[in-house]
Amino acid sequence: MNCCQPTDPDNKYPSRIAIDGPAASGKSTIAELLADYLKYLYFDTGVMYRAVTLEGLRRFGSVENEEIITQLAEDILIDVLPPSKNDGRKFDVLVNGEDVTQELRTARVNQFVSLVSAYPGVRTAMTVHQRNISKRGKVVMVGRDIGTVVIPDADLKIYLEASLEERARRRYQEEIGAGRAVRYEEVLSSLRGRDEKDSSRLYAPLKPADDAIIIDTEHLSIAEVFEKVKNLLNLSSRI
Image (cartoon, rainbow, N blue to C red; front, side):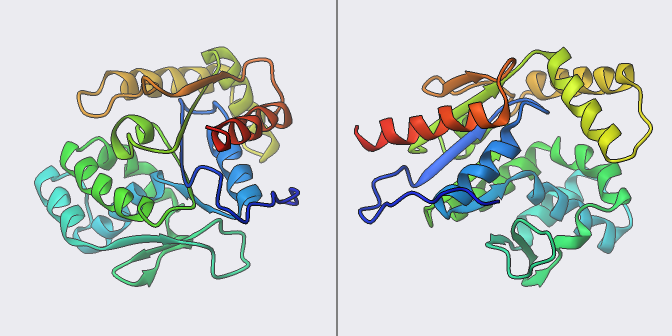
C-alpha cells in the first residue's frame, strides 16, 4: 500500500486503536490501511486462534477436546510482530518462537478454527496475549471484541457495520474474484450463521463498545471509509 504518511513527531495520534465489526464489514481492510498509514503494527487477532488450532492439530491431531485445547492455549507463547519477510504476509506469527505465519491459512486450520475460537477458556487465554501485545503501543487491532473486552481502554475505538445483504455481496464478489465458484445465497447464509454465533455467545459477544465510534459502511467505498477514520485520528489528536 502506498498511503501518504502522517507527520507525527510528538506521537499525538492514538497509540492503541481498536477496530471491531461483523464479518465483511471492511474492518480488516481499513485496519490494514490505517496501520500502514501510521506505520503501526497491523494485528488481526483472529490469527491467534488459528495459531492455537494449528498447534492443537500438530500435537494431538484433533482440537475437539475443549479442556486439552484450553490448557494448550494457556501454556504456549504466541506473539505477533511486524513482517520480517516480503512474501505477502502482513505480520509474523510466532508460536514458542517458531514462525508459523504461512501455515495458518491451510484448509485444515480453516476447518477447525471456529470451534477453537468458541472455547471460553481459549478466548480468555488469547485475551491475555492480545493485551500484552497492545501494551507495546502503536498498534491497530482488529476483531470482534477488541473494544469491549480485549482493550476496553483503547485510545480510539471504531466499529464498522453494514447490512447483512451488503456484506454478503462484498464477500461474494471477493470469492468470485478469487476464482472460487460460490452462490450468493450460500455466502448470505454463511454470514447470517456467523453473525448469530458471534452475537449470541455468552463470552465476549459481538457488539460495539459504549464509547466506540460507529461507521456505517453500507454506501461508502473503502477510500471514503478510510477518510472518515483519518478524520477521527485528527479529532483524537486535539482532545
